[in-house]
Image (tube, rainbow, N blue to C red; front, side):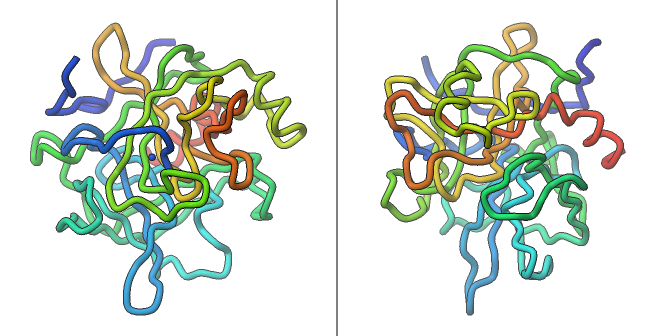
Length: 261
């Protein structure tokens, strides 16, 4: 089954020379134009709840557990087109949240941890702007291996606070047995992807949930969505021999396409 690219998906106007992301570096403007920051209203302001990824001009993919069952959708908003939270972002609001119908909505249960957000207005995408674009979806059940990148505004160490700057880190797809050993029955390899760095020091962490795990294609240079940040060890990020679990997007391609097209 061939990949289906949507217009300019997975392309960007900035390529670097030569994180909750731990062991990473600040992302440059336009380096990850599909990144979304999802914020929840707290008092007079907004705080980062997690991340998301742009699929097209009206749909964003994220993790279901980012959205608490007792919060109103109108209290959430998305930030696009920025790497620093104190910059002037493009703000998007949502009129529909679709959590996977088999997601348990129970803390500590992460099967089918995937959700779609519909925006109230079109998002401007490349080439209209140079710092916002959609990601490409993979083939159904496509297998990925090797180096991947994860991005987010989550904590940059286990006990820290969220980052003001979007962070990125290169990690690798890990054998399923690594996450099966660390997370026992919570890791289900059919619907989850294990990624990290076995020597430790690089990982996603608290606050990155729902953000994209991506890989650049050697064939066409586009970026494809491998997974979305789901869970890891509680307050144990970037530990040696560990890793984190990501919702396996290739497994859910049909579920996504049926709802956004």
